[in-house]
Structures are given as structure tokens and as C-alpha cells.
Image (tube, rainbow, N blue to C red; front, side, top):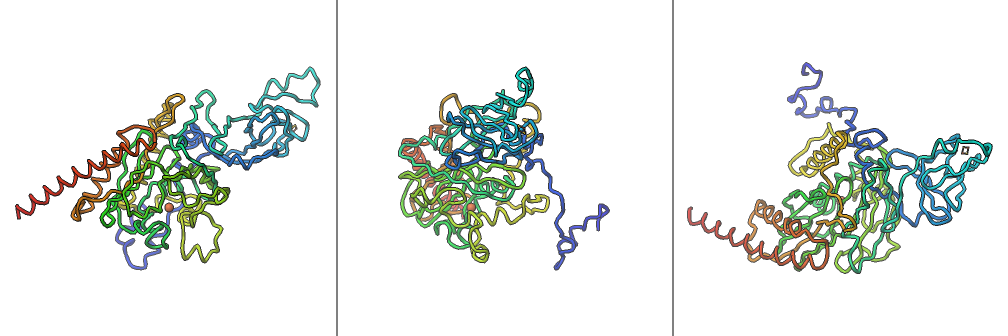
Length: 467
Ligand code: FES
Ligand SMILES: [Fe+2]
């Protein structure tokens, strides 16, 4: 034992030393707690978050929980969306039992009538001379419908940001398939899954069945390249006669975009058309949504083109929900099992991180800095704010190019270096995602590959001559 009462390192490395390696209790909540007044919760309240499919809302109010707050969402009879604190400010009855009005909603108990912005329109049990309705209002948040989803902004009303229209939602020929999955764990566990491209090799190809294409069995070189919105979570592989770069994208604070996992790597392609855009949205500290949309278009290789395959707790990819028999989940676990099984909030002080975890480490560092900036009254450096009325440029992409010869990209260092160079092409172009950007990027990346391989060959020849 050390003087602090903890077992020393030598004791912890002994065989059968479970006694000395019992997990610590009590997780640090700086990056995970999202309720009102928490550091991370205040940061998260600076952004628009999706919280349900538009198709889930009909002509009755729906109770929702978001960022640890109990709310109710409804569409009034004039078609406007309202998102109010759930409990009536008069005496606390839930507005999920409110009666929707032409303008706003009326509490069932004593008829207080609230507009969608929280204004008290009427307190019918009070005398007509009463001023009470002018002295209070029901808490209300802005809510908009975009991409088949409802989004809320829950921060200071004077700081409401422009809604960010990501360029991937402005593709031509794009059919959107919105989905929403309930995940009983903290939002950071979902987000870290996206910062962790090595899990695509193990969970999705090597140890848990063939969930992704066989090319994902090849050990990738990893890199994490900064973008104006966050970073690219990159895996580059030499697959037969091809180099294959898959760059998922992390957009702060909780958005991610991914190319497909189905690329067979049999022909060249350079595509900045991610298949999926998703938000990891905290309902509270222990429950989250994996919510977003799949882009169905000629380039995105969606696993299904049938809209009915997507929806609430429905996504056509194995292991995204708990709806399989338990033994099947044990035999072939998926992302849901990996994200949820550590418990509602991972105690990160019990982790043992390696070099393959550096995307996760990078995200935590950047998140902590962004939270501290908001605590200090500053605007966080990330993400870059959208220019008024213009789509936000994003950078997720997937590249397959034929190598000029069999010895090209001879080791993982060369694979990593080329991957970073190729991904930087997309960032430097700074064009919105489009077929035109793909073509421009393809030319530049091909040139970069030729140049890289020529220099590599010259260096190899030099080394051979020297020996
Ligand atoms: S509790 Fe809502 S009007 Fe009285
Ligand atoms: Fe995954």
C-alpha cells in the first residue's frame, strides 16, 4: 500500500490481483453533467439540438426531456411549434395534459393559457382586473423543424445562434431518412464512439462478425486532423492494390458524420458524401438520443434506400439498439452494447488509454477548453459560426485510389502521412460538399499520391544504395 491508501503499482500488476485493481467510485462530471447550471450543460445550451422526429408529433402535446429539463412540445392549431417547461407555473400540472389552442396551449386544471413563447394569455379563474398574467410567464424555448427533425435551442435567448445548415443537407438528389435511437447512457459515450476509428476494425470486422466490409479488417493508420468545426477521425488502410481513407467527422459539440462502412474497395472513388449525420443529444446525464438522418443519394451507399427501414429505434445496421435477443447481442455485439455496457456514465479514472485512443483524448481536451471558454464568458473557438444564410462547409469523406505500384506506402508511417495529406486536400479546398468538390479533390489527391510515391521510391532507392 502507498501512504495514500492506494495499492502500489507493483501490487496492481500481480496475477489474480483483482483485489488491488477494484474500480474507483465517483466519476468526474465536468464533461458529462448537462443539467442547468453545470459547466457542460451551459456549454451545450449554446447550440441547437434535435430531440424528436417531426413525424412523432401529431395533434397532442408530447412530454420530452432534454438537457435534464422536463418539457412539453406541441404544434398549436395555427401550425406553430411550442416547447414549454412541462409543469404549469400556476400549480404544477403537466402540460402534456394541456388542451392545444388556436394560439398556444391551455392548462387543463384551471385554464391558464400560454402562447408558444411562454406569454400568459389568460388566467380565466382570476378577476378581470387581475394583473397576475403580466407578472409571470411559462418557461419556453425556441423550436424549429428541419430535415424531418425538431430542434431546440435552450440557451440564453439573446445569444440564439443561427441554425447551422450543414452542406451535407443541401445535396442535390438527396433523400433524407430521419432516425432516432434511445440510448441509456451519457452523451459523451456516444460521441467518443465516433472519435474512435479503430473500433471499426475490431467491433465491426474482426472480433464481432462482419458488420462492415472485409476491407475494415486491415489495421489502419489513424490520424485526427483539425477542421474549422472540430476534427476528422481518420483511418487509412492499404487494401490490396488500393489505398483506402475513411474520414469520419466530429463537429463540436455533438455532431458526427460518417461515410458508409460498406465500401468494397474494388475501384477508385473520391466522395465527400457521408452516409449519415447524427447528433448525440443528452436527455439527461444518463439517457441520450442518437438522432439524425441518413443521406440516400447516388453516392452515399446507404444500407437501405427504403424510408420505412428508418425511424424511432430503427436503423438498418446491426447492433444499434437493444432489440435483439440477449444471447445474439452477446455473440455479435454492436455499437449499442459497446456504448451502453460500461454503465450510464463511464468512470474515466478507471481507464487505461493507449495510442489508438488519441482521438478520444483529443476530443476530451477540446471539449474541456470549450466548456472553460463558456465559463469565462467567451465564445468557444469551435465550431466556426455559419456565415449568414450560407451552408456550413463540412469535410467527412471516403477515398479509394489505386497505388502506382506494389511497394507504394510501404509502412504504416507512410500510410498515415499520405492519409493526412489527402484529407487536408478536402479541408484546404474549403468548398461545400458537392460532386464538383469531389472532382476537384480527386485530381489533387491523385497528384499528391503520385508525388508522395515518387519521393518514397527515391528515398527507398537511396537507402538501398547506402546499404
Ligand atoms: S395548474 Fe395549470 S392552470 Fe392551474
Ligand atoms: Fe461503430
